[in-house]
Image (cartoon, rainbow, N blue to C red; front, side, top):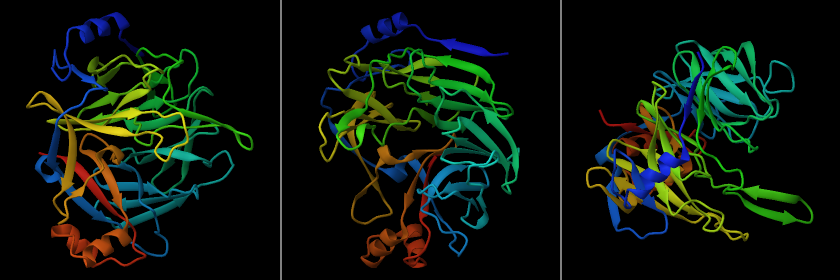
Length: 384
């Protein structure tokens, strides 16, 4: 049976009106995106388990390390260029399978961004944006079926929700858009609608006109509309004042409320990036209207659950000797076991190793790399 979850604006206004910045009320946090907060420094290894996975390199397996999904035993990646290659590695980084079904045919994908790996079912789900469909393959790359969805849908994010369904974020901007849904892995039918307030007049694009190219726009690289968090998902609708948490039992609750209300006058958006049991990381991102070098200057904010307070943060990686910051806002979310991953390119690791800037397991890995090696995948896992 299809489930429908809705939150009314009136309830959210009551919640927001009862709170001060950084003070919890029934688990809801308020963040003033225009305020200044004290600074705080953290060591990554103090609150996350960090694992490094060096990807095996051979003639058939050369990748930039763009991870699309990680399961208990496998990692699936693609290259940044749309060359059609998909790479399956095991969790130790051993190369397993290279798949390429790129093309214009009915059983082939064209522009493929989002990929979900279901190890238990032995299936790979690939969202092909131009054709508004999801193609399903087995782990050897054999075509199984096509899931067709509406022309008003473009999935920016897809994750395993349960054995039979995926949770998806639809970025296609139309009136009465439905940005989130639970869909069937078998046929794409909507098994759970998630409705939250949205205003199509509010967006965080930086828009430009060019005599040669016409209209074009940019959005922040750090924008993640759907973020896995332990056994739940964080839902971010850019025009909403509220960030929501969605649970496996289909409960939708307010999680973070921003103030002042979002508008195209302030042009500051609150974009969550990673959540742990204690710390909630997010950015207050300003959208500029000129073609400056940094269109989206961000203030890195962190809510400390134990202290019930907000800070500007810097996180350092203890496996570097030079106080190397970790770009939490540029990390990529994964699932309920692995909060995020960061891809580290081999030449960068080699240079740091030769300059004595690495230690521990990361130094051991870097000592065995050369300039042609595949990246090392850094996994940020929830502490057990």
